[in-house]
Image 1 (cartoon, rainbow, N blue to C red):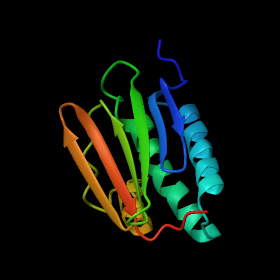
Image 2: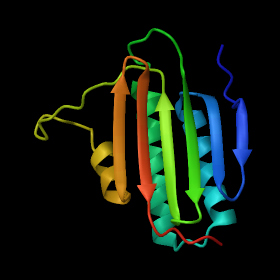
Image 3: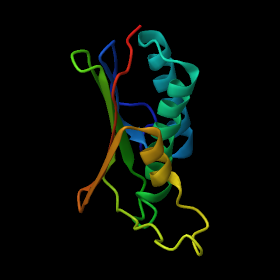
Image 4: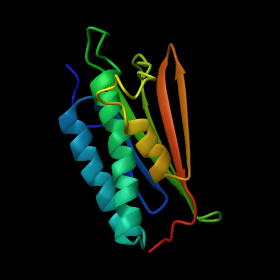
Length: 148
């Protein structure tokens, strides 16, 4: 059984990590709320930027929870790592899993869903998605993030 509590529960002004969390909707929701609290505690964000950050990471967590292990026949885990670089005032968030990438339907006319990646791209300054047989890693970056 996979525990829904993380093996690494790190949060300070430059780093937020939740490692080995259960890839399910309940854990994704809890981590989203903890991340939002971290942002509020350590950063001076306007409500729009704060909402953009939380929504973008929520999309990545939700995708991992819903799709990464759908064909695996087992439950899996996901990780969230956020790092703030005070020199460049950039915030980088990486969400990863060890599941299987599901290629999105390329045709918007037949796609009932699949707007998460375009949403992440619209809400962040940069997005990189790396897929392999070892899993998927979504990295998002925001520039000019003011510290509190």
